[in-house]
Amino acid sequence: MQITTLQLLWFVLLGILLAGYAILDGFDLGVGILHPFARDDRERRVLMNSIGPLWDGNEVWLVVFGGALFAAFPKAYAAAFSGLYLAFILLLFCLIFRGVSMEFRSKRKGAAWRKFWDWAFCISSTLTTFLFGVAVGNSMHGLPLTETGDFADSVRLVQMLHPFPVCVGLFAVAAFAMHGAIYLSMKTEGELQARVRRWMWNAFWCFLLMYAVVSIYAIASIPRATASFRSYPWAWAVVGLNVLAIANIPRSMFFDRPLRAFISSACTIAAFTFLFGLALFPNLIVSTLGPEHDLSIPRAASTEKTLGIMALIAALGIPFVLSYTAVIYWVFRGKVVLHDESY
Image (cartoon, rainbow, N blue to C red; front, side, top):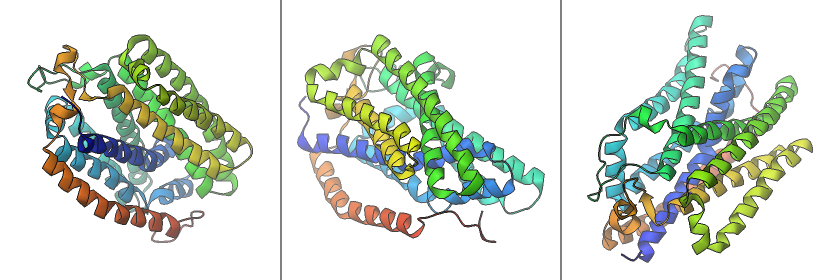
């Protein structure tokens, strides 16, 4: 089956939504991962308030991604949620618990109360990031999909934790920790900012190590990770730009230019999202039972009329979403200032 223009459009738009979520909520999750490294209650409040006005808006990108996947590619949505139900429920629980942790932490001043919610915030942020990475790793590795588009059996969470997805999960944790540390360097000052810069370097070296491990592992054991480059040689340009963006992160950090480092980190995440989509293309879910069972874009897509109506709605709605996001980030720019009503 040939891929139509509208089907390709929505595959690309899903990639953009996923990249937007990873970039924007990525630094939120990174702040949560780094939260225990703050020395006292004031520093932990600064970290939470750096993302306080933004985190719930950032998660809207994930909601829109899920809604778009459901409407544009319902068979892929149904297959993923039926086969990976337990994993998605755990992920949803972590996302909810992260928000609850931020809202509940400052409701009381007791040390035990705040310590509990601090660790809840860190663990839920870390586990959320890890599970996203595991999902990406399993998507590249493949899942037991039958010719009817159903899973051969429900995939238990422990079955998802084979070496490659675990490596991708750890890579995601390192990448978001680096992304979050760079963001914090723009929002903090004084002694805390000096220590945040040390966090940046430590997170960057962990990121670089896991990047090398995942790249070597994918090239050696996941043939589809590089197969698309033979059909689309221009994609090597994205790899080159990705390497340049990664190289510019330590350069910008060394010259104390956190905004440039943050932009380079965001471009790196966007490039990884593109390469992930390219590794899957022209499929949405790859089957381990044989390529004839892969859930391709045409097999999973809604009707052309549905996709056309969705494209019209997206054309009308996306400018409002982007405008809202830009205004919120502009209003809450600058260093964090604590008030009595702060987190």
